[in-house]
Image (cartoon, rainbow, N blue to C red):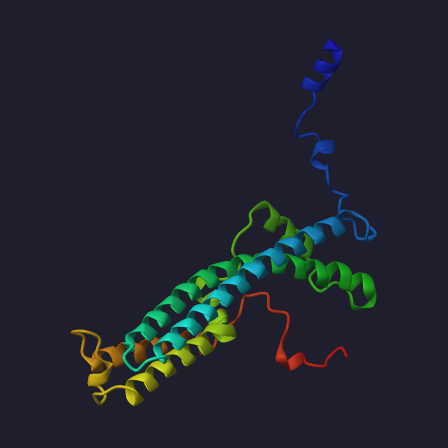
Length: 236
């Protein structure tokens, strides 16, 4: 027993055998029942979890917006500025969903790396590997995980997908409510307490134009977005 302990103490942690632990874990000739399949299933589970979190945020944003719209138009006496509170709540949901989208993009990027460079290659080796450095990149990502996209890009993505339409609906409803269902003419009808209607309208217009600018400005997208409208019917 003492000899075994002494021999264990003599093992150099920098020995080559120890440095090579795991070196053959993901060899290119490993079958689908190997460690890479378990790794892929784990990343799919994480990606699905974050996808569900995104959907829950969108669901509650739509529910709250629908409730505010219904209440505001249920009576002419209901104040129009409740719709602006609804727009503010959409901003909060947008920020939350953008943060979740950044997390979702991390797991989706790993899944797409495995799909492109392992499974696609296994199905058709003649096409070659899309990224010869994929093993090193994925290894670095596991060693030091980091967000892959900026917060502004995540906000732009969610605006394009969901929230720009929601803002258009609720602010359009506010404009109709102020212009068509108020006793006073515009801009007096848009006033909120002591805040003049012209100032309220200006803030709403600037906010909407800012959302348009963030969503539609040209950019080089960093997000892992594998589905594009230009590829419709490509592999049918």
